[in-house]
Length: 571
Image (cartoon, rainbow, N blue to C red; front, side):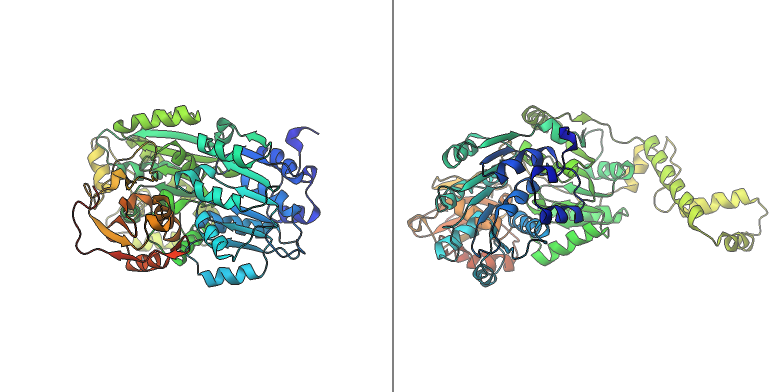
């Protein structure tokens, strides 16, 4: 049997897992699953270079599910995820794959959920624990979670852990696991810090490298240079009008932009919604359910809010704002073309951002083609094609057209003209807000007035490396977001250096426990018994109240707004 004909049965999976796979529509394994599943089933460590959407989740969950003993009620498998969204997603995948395995218990330990709920879940003796580094460490320090009998550890999206400043937490967690455990690590890139983790904690791992070109063959990738007098809003509406897609995600940099772009699209007749870090979990889940069910077609999201998002309907990704680095680009386009499905991505890039474009191409060896904004002729043809399709649909599905033929003679005006003229009048009335007739002399002015945006969107600067934590006493974590270019508030945290606190702990708590993007963090200064942090104005009081109760290193952070403070406290 050739490699292309391999089935999940050929990989050694048992009948209960195969039945679950069949229910979920899995037919043939993908490359990473073919390579990874046999290794993990046989107890090997695995080091996988694989990006989001490659099929890696099933590649490690399936064999580890088969290797657990459901009659033993203690943690046997630990899966580390960088965000709470991914943690919950991995928990759900485990539950779906194990629905025919009696006695399997899976728990997700992440920020934003009551400790009491998690305490009760842990007392039930889950065999699989999924979680974010901060919350996992907290449970380990409280002794509400033990890893003494653990046999497998998975580090998913290790590069994202590094970017968010969690690598030291990951080390601390793995140190608490048995030395003879099995370890699997997956990352979209292998910087030196990730390789260091692999050397320190893995035992002769089997290495699986998934070629970036191989991953990207199902995603057609283009870029448009922002120029020619077109605002990005005008361009976005034009591209959306000519693209054929089921559902789309538009990526922007700021929370405010998600709302403004969504409002603009709604005014232009698109069914869209914003997804950002200020939304509570209930609102977020409701929005995602609308997208999955087809009630929503376009999602406007930030990178942080979209992490872990997996919706089959998404066939188009538009980078309205350029990503901060090539890794962010990979994660964005990974929302479409998932696990072999066909997808499409479009990047809006300014001339000043060409360096980033070259960096993306060089770093991940991707073929990203330049495209022009859809011309007037293309726009008109697209409208005519869609209108014709609507006419064909009504013609094929209507059985009462004779009733409307009779009405034609009743609505005919006193002026004597033929039915063809009446049809032209009705066609003009039916075209709605998008004209089917645009002459060349109307040009860009007509289109821009038709797609006019009522609000201006401001965008900050970006860096090629993205925000990174530092152990320096005064750290500018997000230099593009300091008080020099926007209004910030100063807050005091009742933990400092003497408590063992570091900058990465503060960033991790804000990112995971409160779901606030690092772009909203300004300077951080550490003192002996307290710390000072800059946060953007306008953060909801409910978020700050929750943050104040967050525990780091088993101590409450207790954040307070500073009304008056020395202007030079952190420079």
